Length: 536
Image 1: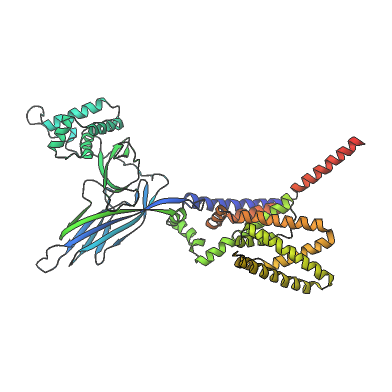
Image 2: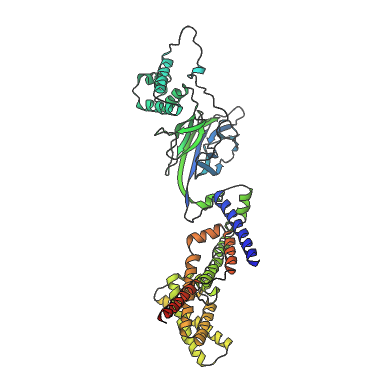
């Protein structure tokens, strides 16, 4: 009955821990490794403005409109944005049908040249954002689409522009099988150039060699909706970066971007959408001069930094009660404390399942904590040195027939003296281990020396050395587990994993089977019995 109780309790603890762990990993995107990073960029739009003419009242009111990137656009998300506009009122219009966001700046009086800044941090998403497709197919508004052309007054239309467009459309349709391949053929045709019909369209509409605009006219002439997209190329640091323009084409029930370089149906490089449509980046009233300078700076952020930006009620609660909200000093303390139960379970496994003999449970864990300060190899050398010297002194004290408590106090004094001596010697040899030695668990060393001496007297030197080596081995294993960088990160970012450690400790507490060392020992005994039977 008790075993069933422990089993049910362990299952509840494990499922609770895994549920919280999965939510923080899958929804809040907490990383599983400490070195996982994400690309991010700082983007900035600087508006340089100059005051215009004063009105009849002697004032110079001004209004500016600036497109700013959507909060989420396919592969990127803006997690932080701010405006630096001293004395200006500002208002963001984010509920537009075209999906754009426009910020309006206004000021009653501008007396000199001023600058307005828009700054934002952009994170790259793990996968493209799920954007719901339009419920209806967007209309084609181009005047060159068949349904939008005016009816001819007399006879068929013989406009050279329309004849050229129709000829190019028919030729591209003949070489394609569907809307997607038709778009590909149009871009191949436009990129190739050298066609007189393309020249007619370009010259008549005064496109000035704008291939994106030319391709848009020919695609919409086949009743395929398109929209112009403007954005920036997110590469390395760029000052005064140029805007990139490409097309979104509505095929197969959704918008698909066409790469501005390869013209494939996906953006092969990192482009941040800034706004859609043919409106300018900015506009202004009441100003004599306005220009906008865009800049991009690449950054690499820890994945945990990005996860903390997540919002939502559950996320806010989990983040509010996380260790990352504690003062830095407390965070460093809990990074150590959270791993002590893990070290304790490691010692329990080594003792109860493997069969390694140690001096207690916490002595190896505390020695492993000391190894964190001294380093593993320096810690082993110090442990062996101090214990060996302490045993010699303890053997001498045994001949004096001292009482237990005074003897322990005397050994403690000797341990501190040995530590002081080692620190001085190390300092003269230019080994910086003095601070680390001071953090060594002095009381644990004292008790270890006493217990080794007692076991030496009662069970002999073999048993004492075997238990001592088992304790040192357990401390080394605990150190390797407790201070593994990934495990340290996991238990600090996901402290609910301690519930799984607790569940495992409870289950192990009901284990009463053989230890691994006993299997080997009994196997040797069984072989010896079989040998005697054969000999008998």
